[in-house]
Every structure is written in C-alpha cells, then in structure tokens.
Amino acid sequence: MGEQKLSITLPDDMADAIKEWVESGRYSSTDDAMRAAVGALLREDEDQESRIEAIRERVRKSIDDPRPSLTGAEVRQHLDALYARHKS
Image (cartoon, rainbow, N blue to C red):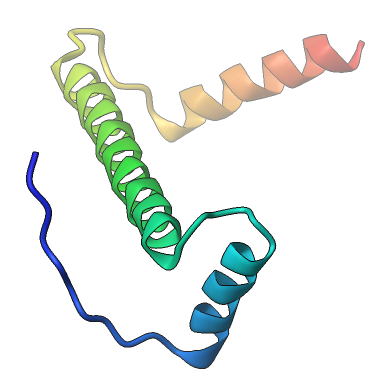
C-alpha cells in the first residue's frame, strides 16, 4: 500500500488537540494521530452505511410482507391490549 502526502489546515482547537495527544505520548507523531482520526472516520462511515442498508432491508421486507395492513383503529386496539397486559 502506498502513501500520499497531504497538506491540511485545521481550526486551532483541532490542531491543539492533536499537539496535546502527541505531547502526552498518546500518539508518536501528528501523522499517527491523523491516521487514527481518518481511520476512525472511515470506520464510522462504513458502520453508518451498514446501518442504512439494514434499515433499507427492513423496509423492503415490510413492503413485501404479504400480511394485510392494519388500520389505525386495529393498531390502537392491539397497543391498548398490550398496555393492559403489561399494566396488570
């Protein structure tokens, strides 16, 4: 895997945080800190995509569900019955 050099500009608070991480020994260099930050962002994006795909799949299953749809009154009746059982 190759590497590319990038030049970035960060707000003072972000740059200060990276410097503090390096000075405290949490990371050995600003490069390491930035790699960790970008890695976390990439993992977060991947997780987000996975969650969105799971939601899409649930929606597809719901749309394809052959069972008849319930009316609002039927849903309310069912919820009231569940609540009554839970309450007692």
